[in-house]
Length: 502
Ligand code: NAD
Image (cartoon, rainbow, N blue to C red; front, side, top):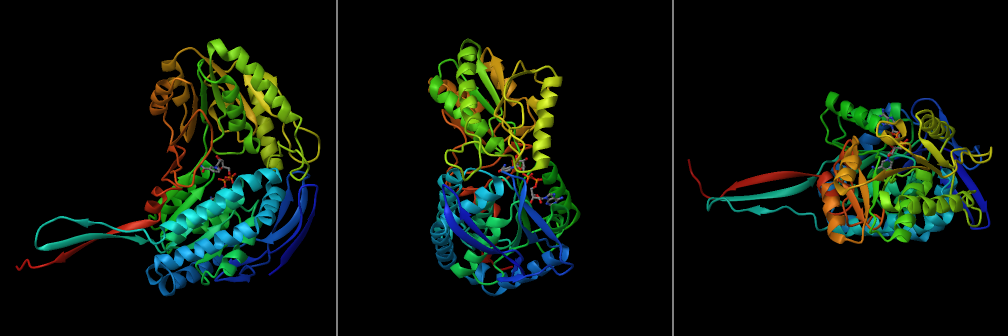
């Protein structure tokens, strides 16, 4: 299969990367079974093609499943002690650390997020995730149950076997690591499909997986499109569980595929329309900064984006004034991810650019006030200005639907009761951010909000040891933390007769 070499010669990073562009199956680089289809990988900062990579089909998923089954039965799963799995995960963490600049550069190139942001955020979080789950690998254990004197009853938390994993484009490396680390720690083998738009760092990680010493077939990476490779994973009868991060629509398709095949358990991390609530007793300066980061981070392409910002009446004007200043400052820092000082990158694709501009148009048509921004920046790449809407109504499209772009809706509220109702008026339930120096109020409100991840006086700061996941239509199951282990293990109950004779 092919290779891709790229020389970064930029103001913030100089270095070379080299990776394979084929499919990583059974520890080897192979071409797709059928045909020689490739997908162009686009640099969203300028719209130009970076390289092209192989795309597989269902036949390649079959091949990967055979490799994963074989590895599970011979060298992994219950055949491999947890401590050995943990050592390999730690080794992979060391390699990611060693190659952190290169991996950060690959993601920055592929998604347009500033190099220093990836290096300071996604990369250390990826390394910490690998080390965290490495630590769990030899601590996954069942329980003994008291029953009666004639019986020994206990549980084992066993891996599923071969698990399928499907990841999105907005944090390519991190999404792959968050998926593979707990699955490997608990002894599963993997068939993973990265987003076809952003496979580069996943392909680079494959070589590091080999270098770390993982046996062939433990991790298989089949790049390809959702409707072919993704659908084949979701409906595969020999894949015992599937974990997905992406849009709600595809999440539904994956559940249907499970229903119609082998009823494999499905965990879903989907989208959101998360509220940020700022009470009049908040530290305003801090609330403005966090709220701005909460929506504009990664140009709004974050599942936890705080896209509906509710501000209490008496501070609304002052908040808006200061928030507008932060949006304008960001607009002045729009740029190539490898330029000095860039803080606001492009959207991932032309399709996403069209979608976000479509939402902005819908906002104007439905009568919201476009307060600032609202347009494409420049005519190269897919940049959109930080945008603020005010004078919003609950039934407007931009208030209800996930935009996945740098569009903040600022909404005025009067009372605590009212804002809880407004914030919960959504099909989503991924996260919320609450700002108040009255900690009792902040906690009371947080408990009343329908969201899986709640931040008090901060926003979107995840931790490797803390579970992450959604309420309502934002998902099923939890990633990260000890809770993630449950989604990669099944419980076996064992009853042993110690002396009951019939
Ligand atoms: P997407 O749903 O379009 O694609 C995600 C993945 O699913 C890709 O790998 C894609 O190829 C694959 N896919 C597409 N159709 C499929 C099918 N029919 N069967 C199987 N797989 C299929 O999402 P995206 O555009 O890559 O990412 C954006 C979305 O992801 C947003 O809605 C965002 O909120 C969500 N997201 C959620 C989280 C979270 O943790 N909750 C994190 C990041 C992104």
